[in-house]
Image (cartoon, rainbow, N blue to C red; front, side):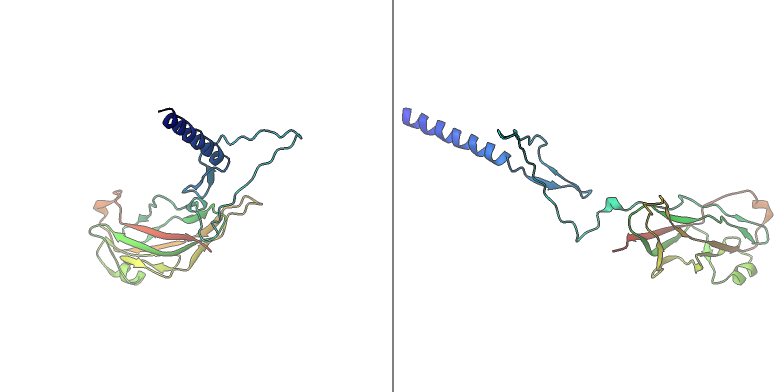
Length: 203
């Protein structure tokens, strides 16, 4: 019995020493935001008798990825434009993408979803000649809109300028023309369509 107890105590001492030894080399984890931290933050080391102490540093190589926390791009939540009885329009002049990221933000495509009853026509002239008040000819940065996905835009917002604290801006000028409208529905407002952009940081 004494031998068994001695064996158990010896194993306990070996395991406890193993834990202490392992703590000197903590496990490191990579967080989703690209940072790395030790599993425990208490890896203190006593100063040696000669008055010196050292700290080691580890580097987690993330060169094959661009952490998503680097991307900070904004677009207006909504745009309101006005349509007159004759179908002419007044659109905002400051619609833009703003890039606060350290790399250029490329806008590769957009997806356009029309609200029920609304439609796009192929030209401003076609919109001007129709009696449909919900027929629109609409462009963003000279790209005529249509329902569905529009690929290969090739637009880019420059990177944020750290030195000047300048925001990278991609201006998106708007133009619009609509069908003639009944003055009886004047001063009413409704959502016509939604545009969703696909944005990625440059390599």
